[in-house]
Length: 290
Image (tube, rainbow, N blue to C red; front, top):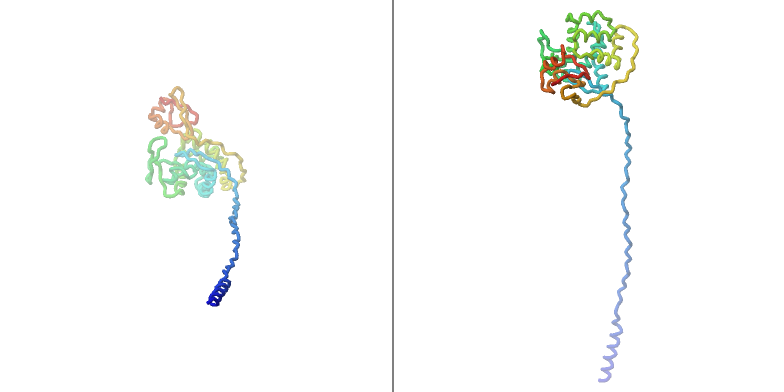
């Protein structure tokens, strides 16, 4: 019995020694730090070339409608119609410089109302005997009748026939064809325009844009350019100048009709109050309006 107990005790001791706790080897995993790399978007440099601003001269043309254009518009107009003007000079005897200057002035270098709506480049009114198309336009009076053409070339031809076909312009054709100053003054004297500064304006355009070179080509003469700087003009809206509220100072673009509308009076009253025999007025002139 005792042996049996010792045997069991020995088995118990052996069993306790054999059941040693197994260790689980855990290798500590070192986490490699994550490096956050900031992504930089490359800056794109765009080279911009600044083009120099070209100087454009402003022209305020006193046509049948006040027109503001740039000098390059006038040059383009001349380039477009110089051949027609020279052809008319050869056929009718009117200086090409005068034709072009009148076209610039009367049509606003092609940008005026009448030239756009009626291809009328010379402000020619209907007059007695006109059987063609017409348009209405405010000028010296309200809604006056002006000739309408299918093409600007028709306007140029009619202008030549208008001057050659009326006796009051006969004196012009006795003038030397290269004398644009005499022609400009002769047109005003014959009654083509009521503006007292009409000759001055035509001569100014001829000399600033060297329009007389086209006369020289037709006449086979040498041409000497004239260098003149365009005048500085204001495009601001003219304001009435009054003295005691009874007078108005004439500004660019004014006509007796436009002044009469401004002060709600009639053209006849304006002419009577200011002893005017016709519709001619000049810039700076003081008119009684009340």
